[in-house]
Picture 1 (cartoon, helix red, strand yellow):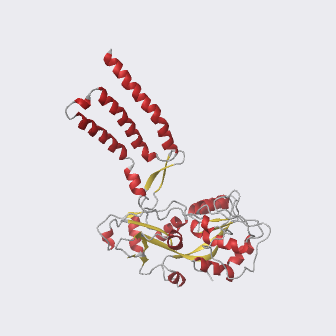
Picture 2 (cartoon, helix red, strand yellow):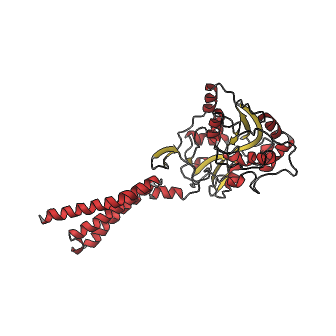
Picture 3 (spheres, one colour):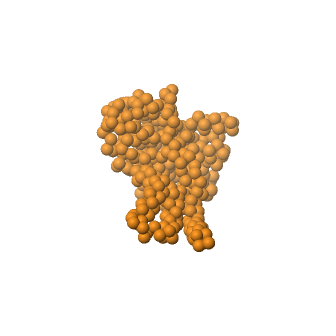
Length: 386
């Protein structure tokens, strides 16, 4: 009976620990910190074992305390093993992540927005076009907004209220096709966007309004400063897998990609042409409600990593000195080489419409193509089309 009673007490204490620990597990999961679950569970087991070892008198036996400490240490290490790789990865800079766009909002006194020397000769009145677009282009069309829209409140992350937002390229195309945006400022459409437009009976009208460079970048400590277009295609097809094959150190290449339908991924696919693309690295992400979703792994600035984006985003918005842009085919990406068309991965970006009936859409685009609009393109940090 005594042994039965001790077992029942041990089970009761274990149940109490679970009762107390379960809300902690729920809280951790709902806050997206799923990588801590293993460590929390290990801590709960360890607390229960502390009681159990005391109950069986392990601490009074020769080397009993060391044995108990060793067992608990192993359990905690196993629990931590689910967390350490994640937080180690998080310690590396995420170059192609989101940036805070509040500081570029129009009519907020931002000194980051390009401005004309005198008021624009064109001003919008009446029904204002609803604008959306890529993160990297928001500073430009926010500058357009401040130049010709009526002064007002245009919060960047409130598409339900604001006439000028940035929901990123994939969502901007979806909002354009749904009639929720009149003009979007983006790179060219992906095949998926084109197909969805055709299915809706809509024609995507793309008006080039500026030029930009598509760039590849590596860790600043990587000795490789330049690659040829063919070397990059070989890396992303999986044919070249070690930096030593392209003039670097003996280190495996970790080639990151971007999500499908993003502007940079669409440009990347066009760059690769008929060269097959190796499957991207996938990581499991925590959703806001504690679930697991699989996404294309975000770029992490490992010493052996390579990634891609657009020049303005990396040099003006992210401003990360831990990466360096590669020369491609012997040419550095710069305003001058984009303008001269010497940089091989220069491309146009667009004001895209899909049949909006807003009467101010075309006059606004015409102004963007005017000398004033193109001056703002240049002053923002892009290259004009004129």
